[in-house]
Figure: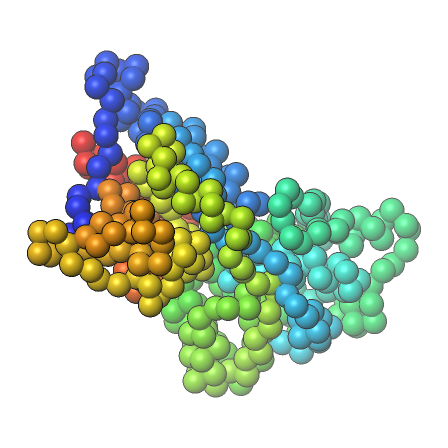
Length: 363
């Protein structure tokens, strides 16, 4: 069985074989490969551009939408008392953006708090199309334009000299988002998953106060394991992810269309997997094993329209699933979708490299 599909995935090659049209040319290894990118709208453009530069035909249908939390009270309370923490853990770029946007809204200037803060750097935060967060100008820019000090009492006290807050971040994109704001990241685990964060911090946090800023729904590995290690961990919600209902019709239409039907679907988080199944009209209970015509088994989404989901056949037959890493892969398998491609480095570039390797290996 091919990654949970009822038959081997097919990537039909062009009949032309000259170097100018060969799909596997050196410069365009993904030529004529149709790839569905399901990232949130504000995040899809970067990966889509990279795939297009490699020759891929990219279809963007978001499986996930980023929204502000229903209440900012827990996050605001933590940010106002940030000086009380020894460690801050940020697990995503969305969390970084939400946190700094909120600090700007609250007029909190914690420049003196961060260990290794670079006062020469500041990031111009601009609103991006489709992003639910409204990013305001950096505090340093506002204060300079007004000629006034906008720091709160907490910020002034910190500048006078208090303990420095250390930051742990998952992944290079997350690290880059933080350091663009002039803040040094102390720890980036070798593997970009929660378990690796725990391994990196376990011996450093006994008796320490740790703040974890994350999405509303997330795995509890970090807080659970760090508490076992003797840390005092507070978890606050900076944003939430929801299913973009407007994507359902587009997704089903694309999967049924010979011209749009992708050969590869990318999954960059467990949330994208769960939301993808939800968009197909299913749930974990709806993804089950049905008898196949040859007496074997095949996965089918039983709550999709009868014209699409039939015993022994899946709407995903022949489509490769591409996962950014082991946690996402685990969710794919849990929901019966299987994993055809998995990135060795758990980043977007790593995922793109894995797709290229898979395509080249099949030809």
